[in-house]
Image 1 (cartoon, helix red, strand yellow):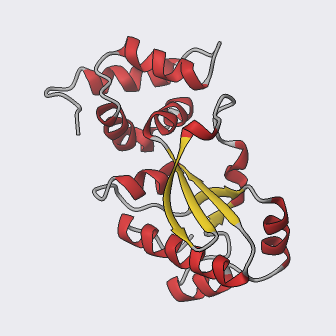
Image 2 (image 1 turned 90 degrees about the horizontal axis):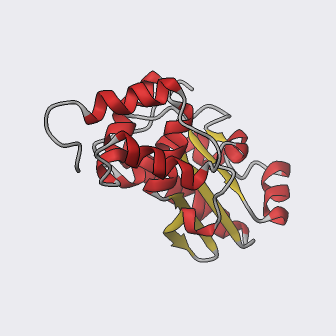
Length: 184
């Protein structure tokens, strides 16, 4: 994606998407995870390349797939055609029900939900990518997690039976061992 989105732009792009969906007339629930969900809550987050999310209303999803409903938002913001990453639907934790999301905004019958900080933390721990270190630091602080044991327990809630990878353990240890608390 050529255009990166700041947290403020993520808000605005998603508001435009909801307005477009509302104008289309079908009830729609848009779910956002990953960096865009973090950007909705952390205005200091670095830019994101795309918005990972999915649509839960099956009929609406068919309408979106069959039309250019994303085109007005894409054109307005100069985004690539894949700016909304539908592939994210399978990236959520296996144990994530409605409690893993909270309503962020509503435009008529179009509603945006974002993953909660604890679900985002579990997903970022599962990915354990180097580029996620700032997000991990923010999420550990937002979840008031100060030890590896607490991080493991938080992860286990969403990925029962799975342990943290060696990489995730090393990343958490680097953050919790850093001088000063990781609270935000």
